[in-house]
Length: 415
Picture 1 (cartoon, rainbow, N blue to C red):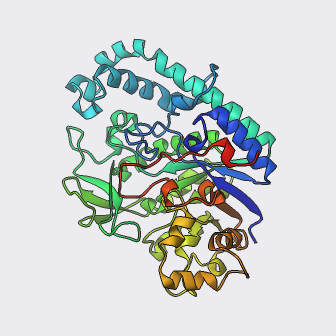
Picture 2 (cartoon, rainbow, N blue to C red):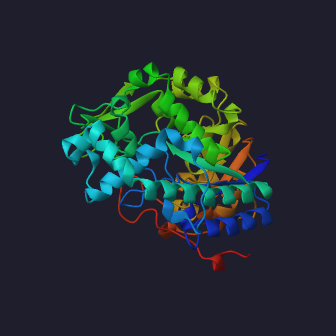
Picture 3 (cartoon, helix red, strand yellow):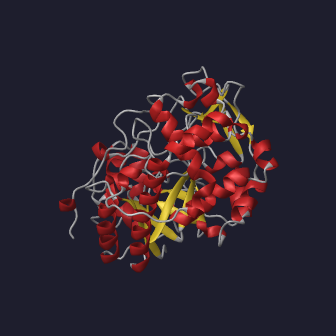
């Protein structure tokens, strides 16, 4: 039986979309006996509001701050100046992506960049303020025995400070453009697959520098959170490479990833393998599951996937979920559980009813099942705790409009 319980709720879904609401939410979690709060990435979102397509793999989103305060950021020297340079230049270029900047800026001519270093102070101060606000929230969470679980998208945006500053670590041509981009093949989320458009890694270049960029990234994540979920973990095994000019993802191919060598490097930065949760959902070959288990990392199970097909072999069915997994009713990419059930097939509804207690509604069944498996932790999206329908879905994969906007009011919960 899952001994620990958590809630999935991004900070932008809180009533005032800032860390002040986060402090109040931690009080609510503690009062209700929860043990963990899982968030989506805290990096600045793209123009559609997606935190998974950020211009930085390291920077915090300053708009989440609620008070004026700053701290020393000496631990963040690896990425901070490059982020501030990128931000200052991008502002001067009216928001153009770095690969459309004048050549001397695009290609980082040293004599030109030295001039810009005098103009980065405001962007450094923003990050100092973000860190101070976050430190207050994290300390409050720890004082209330609430574990913070972060989210690390495996890929980064083409137009990002990271790609601009480390072009050699990504598969780009001499002008900074990719021939292939990332995504996933057709699956249960999308019949055409998903074309994310993020850039592919030059894994041999990462290995040559002893995985420094990735080590710095995971260390940054573990300075922010107690545990971190690595989104699309299978990308460490292989990545779906899609021709840049294609509008869909059907014509991609699998590009080999670094597998054990990178994971071993990342685990050197952790206090234990359970600090990393591997998102191993989708079309996952057994080799990926073996890769995760070989390093004693926790995987994921989603109950919404657990009631179709052969239930004896379905890894998401409650009786097949194991101690080395974190179980969810649904994730940020799923419909709400009430919305899922409303659209479920007769087969799924019949299979779920077999697990129901007398006079138990489907949502109640799913919430109970999430806490009755052998998983070490169960995570419930806030929308499911509030019994909300599809209109409150956080994200519909493969679409860009109308996502990432759901939020609740304090009046929706009993304080």
